Image 1 (cartoon, rainbow, N blue to C red):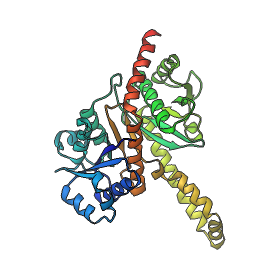
Image 2: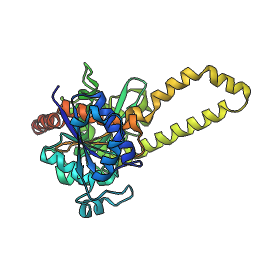
Image 3: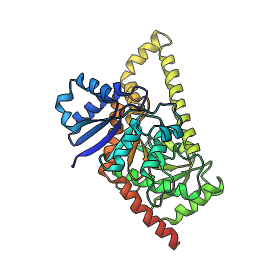
Image 4: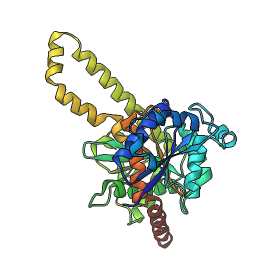
Length: 345
């Protein structure tokens, strides 16, 4: 496999360089075909690198690109786009635009990252709006859901474009023999249910034979594995994602409280420790870290802002998979096919 070059916004996220630098070194140790470019304050980054015991074995595949500014986590996307042209986030994306890097990974401000990435990289031909997609755990494998917040309001053609992009990403990353099952998220499975945007998108997807469209799914189907790709607008998707995260935290809270109730429940918890450990690993957000910004002329991966070292490495590995599989190029090719089918329908 040829070397993959990834630019890292080393100043982004809740922990910033203190987490990202050791994660970068560890990722390089695990992947010999990886080259990382840490973008940020060079003095801070070099100081942390010099203290890292693993640097000597990977330093030939690691470089530092200085940035004078950084985008704050609560900063307005408009301000970040207009006033932070020398930020670590902007310069990391610039490296992708210039061809110096194959992809960008950032744990920084999501809105700012999307705004800057869209402005610098532009969207692929046939894609009007990029979408945020995330792989969620399901009863059967994973379900890829999009959009998760980039587009609060969508037209039918946007949902169709999301379906194409999500299908291609799933095929590239999951390596399944069968084409992924694509569904529209709706308030019911019946054809008469839903608003006009969803209904019109369904009609268009039914005519596109390049997509394995299976119809509508409801919210409770998301985690059952009914579909491999679930499509919705960014408003609905973000609410569904945040609701799911809140529910999992509540369940974990009450489970811990129940096990700590008395000596007997503590004993039961001790007996159940291997099962609980397995479940915790299965639902650990770090196992699924790395949201894709699909539809851009380049690969951009958004890591959780509070990611730890293993989780951030997952985001880097997601970027590597996208680059290796040429996901943007495949999306562009598929969009041409879908548009041709739509014109002939």
